[in-house]
Image 1 (cartoon, rainbow, N blue to C red):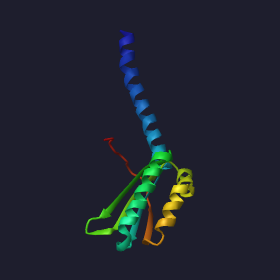
Image 2 (cartoon, helix red, strand yellow):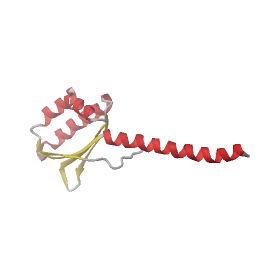
Image 3 (tube, rainbow, N blue to C red):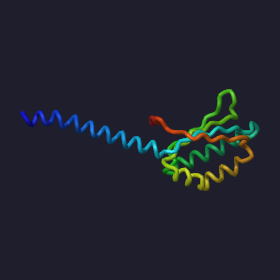
Image 4 (cartoon, helix red, strand yellow):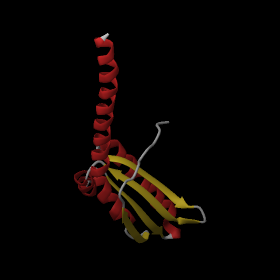
Length: 133
């Protein structure tokens, strides 16, 4: 009888402690993660070339850089030359490393005359979620 009561107390307590540890781990992950939004305006006459350079840069970054967690690019429907990028990096050092890679430097060099304006928006992640295909 005593063993049964002990199980009824210990099992819920173990789940409670585990949930706290999971929440702490999740909190630490989101606190370290770097998430930013980039707003770009591209020269409409060079939009096709810009999209090709961006595609190469994103695909390479995701493939070869473990610290690059997500890179999403979209255009504003009514203004296709207005590009928005969502960037997520595992840490500040992963972001700093990304900026020094050959493929990123190539992208910056190739697109410098295409980009008419660039605004980087620093964010504080609240909740990030996604599904695999």
